[in-house]
Image (cartoon, rainbow, N blue to C red; front, side, top):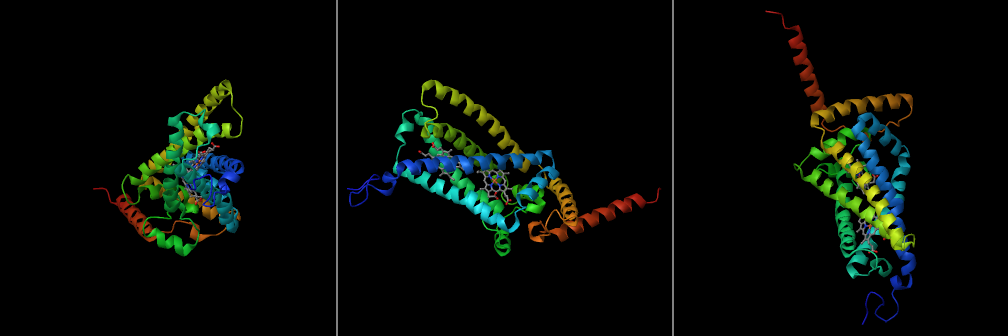
Length: 296
Ligand code: HEM
Ligand code: HEM
């Protein structure tokens, strides 16, 4: 009979033969690039609390590789994520326990590590589809925009992010983001602790106690950053988003004129511009009527 240690011919399975290397690759991808990316990503998003200029400047920088960006995203983020998630699910489903780890980690924390992995998988799929859209083809983004996906527009970063949270289904997106982001933070921080055992960094009880304290402190900092990123995207109103859009438009126009931002209209949020312009015009006309109303 075959099990997860052997194939149908009774030979050791590929995983069993290469378990040492595969476990380390799984662990490494969880830390670099995924964990590192998540820390930078959440901090960038939290910078929206400082105003739309700060966030827009960061997004201009992130998008500066231009046509190389999809290559960087797929090679540096999506491929490691698919590898890590696929292997993580396989490990969790086959019940393959990292025995060296299991001796040290509490049962509860270990099963939370797996549950938060599943939550991260669902959340990240929804999140990437909701904002990024998966691929940058204009036709694809326009098609999924109709069902409320692919909502982020990098050259109107803050306003399109805020609008995306408001568009559609009431508090559904904010709740999904809150649960997803906290699950990712737990998964990464508890994962850092177990990774220290995978790599033989903290084995003695004293070393593990010190590692626990460091991880708890890191976890507290990352929780504050992630809640700030969440609040910055969820709390501003539609009117705040309109004000952000005006600032972003000015930064885009000045950037194009100075040659620091490439002219890429498809990265702007041009949806409903006519309706917005008409509303602005109407408001201005009303305001000038009031201003020039002769005194009684
Ligand atoms: C996308 C869905 C994900 C799934 C399904 C998943 C699944 C898992 C599972 C099941 C484990 C435990 C492995 C074991 O029992 O030995 C694990 C460990 C880990 N994961 Fe994830 N994960 C995901 C995303 C992430 C992300 C986004 C990060 C980083 C932000 C991350 C970082 C880690 C780390 C650092 C470990 C510890 C590795 C070790 O103990 O050596 N994971 N993951
Ligand atoms: C409140 C929390 C979060 C907010 C506001 C947020 C915001 C964003 C935005 C605006 C984008 C689109 C970026 C672009 O297309 O240039 C994006 C993409 C992405 N986010 Fe998040 N994010 C959050 C949490 C997370 C977490 C916890 C992860 C876990 C690692 C994550 C992983 C990703 C990935 C993989 C992409 C696609 C690749 C990329 O565009 O960089 N996000 N996020």
